Amino acid sequence: MPLRTLLLGYSFYYPLTMSFVWIFGGIYYFLRLERKAPRYTNPPKLDLWPKATLVVPCHNEGENVRETLAALNDQDYPDFEIIAVDDASNDATGRILNELLGIYPKLRVLHFPVNQGKAMGLCMAALAANSDFLVCIDGDSILDRHATRWLMWHMVTGPRVGAVTGNPRIRNRSTLLGRLQVGEFSSIIGLIKRAQRIFGRIFTVSGVVAAFRISALHQVGYWKTDMVTEDIDVSWRMQMDFWDIRYEPNALCWILMPETLLGFWKQRLRWAQGGAEVAWRYSRQLWDWRRRRMWFVLLEYAMSVLWSYMMLAVLILSVLGLWLWLPEPLRLPGPMPGWYGVILSSVCVVQFLISLLIDRRYEKSTGRQFFWIIWYPLVFWMVGMLTTVVSLPLALFKKAGVRAVWESPDRGIHQ
Image (cartoon, rainbow, N blue to C red; front, side, top):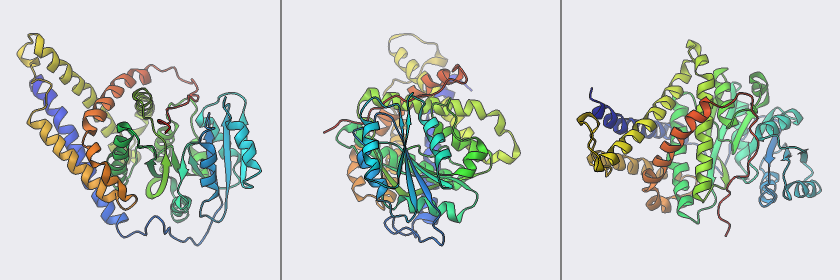
């Protein structure tokens, strides 16, 4: 097969195929598990109400932690405690948490004198918990008051459920980048998690909102402190140990996301590096027939990495061909999309439309973002491609055992 045909063919057919996989998987999930379920404001009643520990690891969250803990204290769940971890914050986070101890009787606070990283904060909270279940969110998140009941429903009714990932919703929408991410989380991330749930394995829980069974965490060794993305790592290890991970779209959690290009790049680079680290570390352990349900997750990740490098090659050769003479096997069409670009864009628009129709169940206003979402391929595909290309060598040559510590992220533009 000529190199030109291989590059153009894979660059076109891979995203086209995966779009159809996510579309049909998401539709099947909606029709099978979601369409007739109660509204998210009407969570199911449980025969048992086991105690839950709501965990908030914090680093420099002084501007957000008050409303985060207020939402946790207002949870529609009969028996819970709250553990907040102040990981060596150098702003007012520690002082505010101490003040809130006098306001919320269910709150306990752990203070770290030295930056230990989110994974260590989660581990210490798990060891300090007076329950068998954790509900973990970030220090800038606002958990919907019904979310704990939705998450705990899976834990109570599914003895092999090790973790449940919730449905993150974007709070800050004042910029184009923020509006694009509203569409991304509903039409891309939400649809992919629905489809992956149908296939039996989920790439990762959402670190901003997830519930865990402590016995499952103990069995797999809790969170690893040397992984850039502790949520991807623990998700893979749980599923490799035959624990089930579920997606619960009714467990809403409102989060802040980057609204500057630099902050967005750093976040996506960390996500990409985290995925590469996990795939590299555990790929050999997956060639066990009993773990075959993880093969699709690994295969899809490997195919996405290959696509990123091939797409980069296509772009470079297309641009070079405008000014330089290239041999026939390397001569590609110009960088402007042709018929294949029109087809991909059309399929993306269909995917966005379907996902937004599903998402109206939780937030009717997402339809207003449709105009902005159509720009998604231009921005996010390019960023995804570049972060994958950059992150792979970072993951492969990373020194083992180096602890991943906190860095204050971009929380959006404050109005």
